[in-house]
Length: 205
Image (cartoon, rainbow, N blue to C red):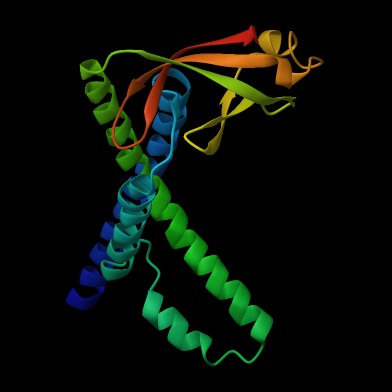
């Protein structure tokens, strides 16, 4: 009787943990969407340190924690051991891709999203120390689509793009981009990233 009671309590605890994890997962997605729309700064610039410390490191930490503590209820090593018995190669490939995708999405939502929000907040603090710099850059192209309208240009030898409104892009979409410059007010943030304060599109003199 004690064995079945213990097993039931363990299962009940796992169910509660799963429910909490699912609610946290959904809550973080909602927070991320709202934060991205209403709060997150607009950036230009690139730096490998973001990829390492803000994106990939949290992802790997998430992978490790999920596997080490069996957070998703998937026995990672056991699953791959059982997969060796499967004879069909395409099933093995699909299963490997699927299980790694599940762990990746868990890490992305539960670890990268908080990491990215913290990084953005630190940038907001950092730019308080900076003065606005104004840069004038030749426009490379204007693009318009259902998903987004963008203006493309080069900044620090990297191609950058900034989303602009439909009303604004309609003024330039049929014009020759070579005749325009984009004037951007920027503030230096962390590493080689700059926060965009304002943007104007002007004819070249």
